[in-house]
Image (cartoon, rainbow, N blue to C red; front, side):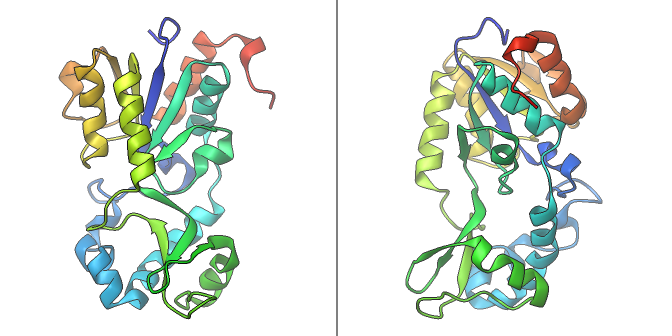
Length: 247
């Protein structure tokens, strides 16, 4: 299916980043929402009311994301792009590990943490200018221009998704003839609706995930497994050594 396709799109979720040590949000017993109410710490309303509380919650996660390295799943998807098989990666993750692995066409539909925006003057600031200091001392980062509170450019509950990324992802879902879902439980809309949109446009569907999804019965291929194990095996099976990215 992948070799014969003219336009493959990958949709990735938290399961692609958990092998890199970044916890997901919804898994039973280990998900971040098992110990925190998302509406109390990670909604835009909660952020505006008490940004210090948000940053106390974020600090351990920010440390994990700063130190995380791409895993075999990230590198496999980058290799599939390099070989001309994958056109676009639609990512629900905010950690930027796809780009670190070498993927160049990534639509981050939940935003990212490489930048922060001031909620007072709307200036955008690169995260590297304050991230190390925040992780070290835990102080809420402030805008260098006006002193307002900086918010990571990741989407909080109650916020609209980044328009350009969502438009790119929607267009890719409509255009693809194969969608590869990797490490996503397909529980969070509107990203979870993209495979359904692809199916409506007669795409074929491959799902690789540990748990069940609402589209399992419509998948052409369904693999229960660790994406960090399965995706490299797919690369090995369908990509010629001459097509592999060096290193």
